[in-house]
Amino acid sequence: MNTRPPPIIHSADNPVYKKLLALQTAHGIRKHGECLVAGPKLTAEAVQQQSQAIGAWISTPDLPPPPPSLTGTQWILLDKKLFRNVNVFGAPGILLTLRLPDLPVFQPTAPWPAGCTLFIPFGDPENVGGAIRAAAGLGAARVVLLREAACPFLPKAVRASAGAAWKIRLESGPDLAELTAIKTVPLFALDMDSAPLDKVKHPACYGLVAGTEGLGLPEALRRYCRRVSIPMTNGIESLNAATAIAIALWAWRGN
Image (cartoon, rainbow, N blue to C red; front, top):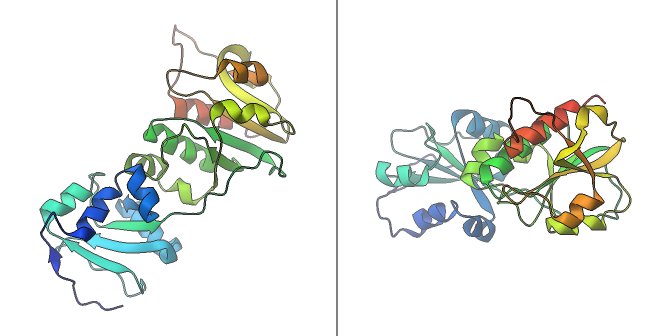
């Protein structure tokens, strides 16, 4: 690639800068088909493992230029003030834009992969990212993002997932209430006041879902699913959504 530095962008009215700001929102991410990635570990992994998905290398004049291997990658130079505005992660080093992976539509009647299909309805992007990270790290077969879920490529979600959204199959799913259409595979739901999950043996192929933050599960879905709980002590009623998912996946990993 041409290693001559591009002009430094100083103006907040620059369309390239405006596009980068748009990637802080779900609408902008969907519109442009890209998201922001930051942090030395994630950007290094992207360069090594996903170079074809990198759209832009974003830096300030005192940060390193893109490596010669990134042919066809746009190099964007911002002044430090504009760079700070784009770098909502607060991470050191350069930023990248990555083209989004495909998110096929979940088909409940299609053959299911062995293992856990995790359904995520969380509205908090950090919970979405944390749950994706747990699913990827603890061996889930795939993640289905329900309509209630925050965009998994928002900066907070990307940071919480530590890049796991590119390491596990993601699919786009229906509303949480529509999961009652699943007929061929057992569907388990994390829910208080139900059977402890360590006392329940799951099948080789199953679905797992938790309720949304605050509202929980729709009543019809609660009645439809086989409900399991994480036993708690000392008067603690519940766990963070992503933490609960991680515990459930771990508990059933070798069951």
